[in-house]
Image (spheres, rainbow, N blue to C red):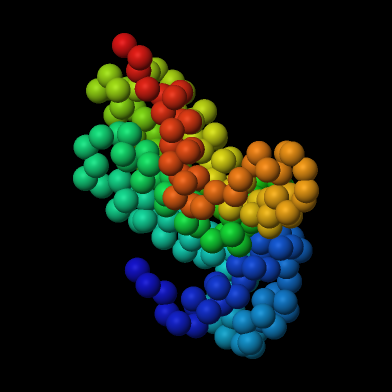
Length: 203
């Protein structure tokens, strides 16, 4: 369900702050200043910083889950569904990946129960793809959560590492020439191929 304009404006303004400074490093005053509203308006929509943070995570996770579910729906082959999952994960905004990465570094102590439940749903989509492949004999017996960790790590690093990767590739030397910059489509297909080399049943 779409949020009212003011609530979405508050959320969109708060995301870069939480991504850069973390939950603990962001004040209500900073949120108000970034949004261009007064405190009364902020508190009218959200009871406080914690409630706003929860709303930010809920909004981003539900939107991502909807995109993932739509992308993999109707795919009869688990291999294709896996590629679609990767493609959606690579289209996330850098600031959203930074937000979750910062919370991960902090041990996730500020992640509310609602967001954890949504994270389970997000992971469950991939787990279901892998388990479907195993049931159909197309994938070997693997721990789906190990594949999830590899996929999340690879997509997160690709998204947030772009600026540093460009600096690295601009340097002269043999190593830089051996590490070409990928576009999103090529990276998705390469990661997909690597994961299939782990997943596919050789029988």
